[in-house]
Image (cartoon, rainbow, N blue to C red; front, side, top):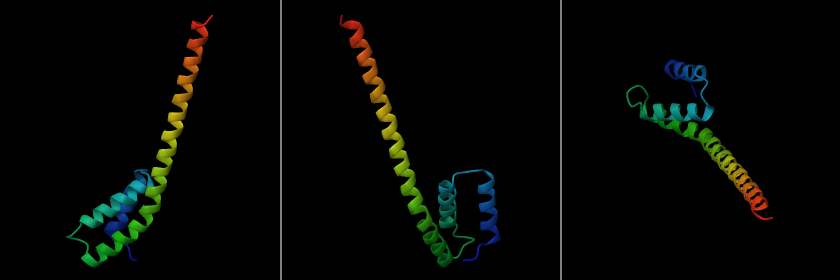
Length: 94
């Protein structure tokens, strides 16, 4: 698949901004998908489908990491709450 100069400059600009790869791929996908003036419909569909192949696994991984982080934080909060209850109980009970 050939990359047009416009696509290449957009990719360079997004890289220089140090954005996360998933964000960059989604942004490029959306820009190309919505560009009905500069990109032919067949090329647009091909590029969007190709980008979605890369986005899918990254999206899944992102949400798995996000869920894992949330569960970890929830476990920490529960642990802290339990410690506070134990401390309170030890002070209240003679």
